Image 1 (cartoon, one colour):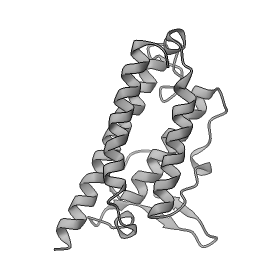
Image 2: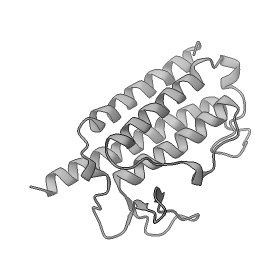
Image 3: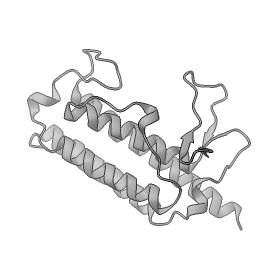
Image 4: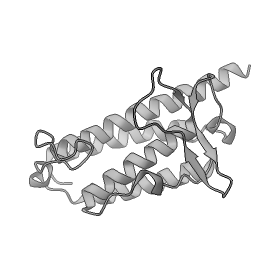
Length: 175
């Protein structure tokens, strides 16, 4: 990324990713499926193998508390689709995003997606950043690719904070 806007967003991405790494290095496999409240969204083991996320097309009220498992899948979903859009590929459908399971597999998967994302945005120019963003606003001309990169950073920051809070709550409740 060559422009000052790109460099700023890249630095923000790296800072936020370092916060993810702080928690990822401390996560235990049991943290992923821990449910902190009766109303949770998590990843469910399927009879045929694999995992499926709890999901509703319309956000429920009250909103379920996500587990670390669900949050790591969620990061993988929006990061995969965002990278597809930036790279000009047909975006993957939500059901195509395969969560590998709790613990090290999920962390390794996200680290791989980080590399994919970094590669997708590495060559963006100032002109690229001014193009209409294809995601998550459905080609709203008010939102540019720069807006999308800023949204990705904000979404990562939010999800990392949630993962960290869940990790800390589980550790504190075990005492």
